[in-house]
Image (cartoon, rainbow, N blue to C red; front, side, top):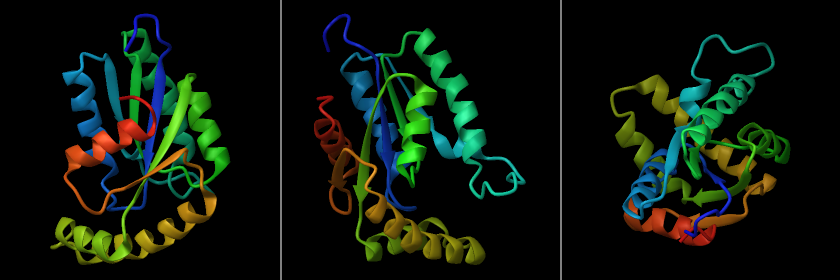
Length: 177
């Protein structure tokens, strides 16, 4: 990365169980290894409040407001790369995230076959019957939404390979490597 290169943001999207958070964390590790000042932001954490506002099922508005503050703080502290894990179901949501971070935003979708996603979810929620059912239902629903919306700039197959290999593929796909 050359001195004076503009700050950039990356949003890693995918259905539930695709590995967004794990891959974002690993992208952060790879950037750290390369000496790149960065921050990793879990958009689920920024939206986590209850109850959601009427008509805002997943607290998108709260996430955007929080992202604006958090991204600004990280950039002011010297981060030149923001790596986010989350979901953008529409081009409008993508636009709002880009507006919130205020810098160039690339979006990379992790694509994983639904049987693999379901296996991952079953492991993650093995003792949580109701949560498992919800995530299994949502995985197919969200996969269809993302496939139709095509808000991403790049797609990385994330069903095979290690988290490290997927993270490296993401960096390459968005031109950050």
